Amino acid sequence: MTDATATRPVTIVTGASRGIGAAIAERLAADGHDLVLTYRERRDDADTIARRCAASGARVLLLQVDLADLEAAATIVPATIAEFGRVSGLVNNAGITGRIGGFLDTTIDESELVFRVNVLAPLLLTRAAIAHMATDRGGAGGCIVNISSGAARSGAPNTYIPYAMSKAALNALTTGAAKEFGPVGVRVNTVSPGTTRTEIHAAAGRPNAPEERAPNIPMRRAGEPHEIAGAVAYLFSADAVYTSGADIRVAGGN
Image 1 (cartoon, helix red, strand yellow):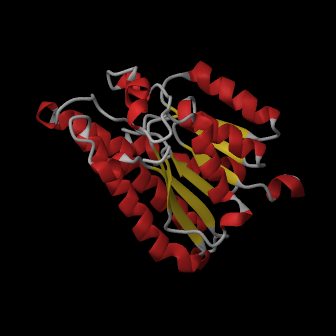
Image 2 (cartoon, rainbow, N blue to C red; image 1 turned 90 degrees about the vertical axis):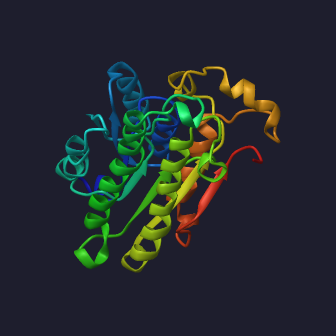
């Protein structure tokens, strides 16, 4: 490993094959990060993003992981360390909403899946990353960014209350971990997108949700993935070295 590669940040981005995760990966690659990108099933999309990141000079490791499988999720940080020798950043981006609909129509099985992907996998990854990064454990410090949602505050009535609950739990992870591990060199922050043009809406059964919601957004439009990625890039930048425990809303004024 050359001196140049030894000083580059090494950042894990979960759910990086499309949407917000893909935009984050490309932005961080342009900013000089080497990357570990996870995806669940769309290998062709993941390969495309990996090539784009590599074109920016990043070394990229692709890992196919279903984050609902917590044993599989537990392999991500060790695989990163085995490949690059260290982990300096983590973006807990991967998430699912469950079906859009009223609260009484939700099922426990679907809600359990939402919590496994949106809460338990980030909890597991964050624990493993901090154990490696913390200066009192021999690490060099690091930065973690959790991708939450404005739903964590609104509660998402008539839409997806369990999803909102899961994102509120992710916000609590940010707050607690930022306070507990700030003294040992680990910053933890949240970025909370509003409605953004990604495939998550189609997966939830309402592909036109961005257009439907636009009239109620102060800026009268949905967000774009690269606009979320910009906030994440700021939190990894030198300008944010004193920022921890923050929640940056990128929601068009909502």
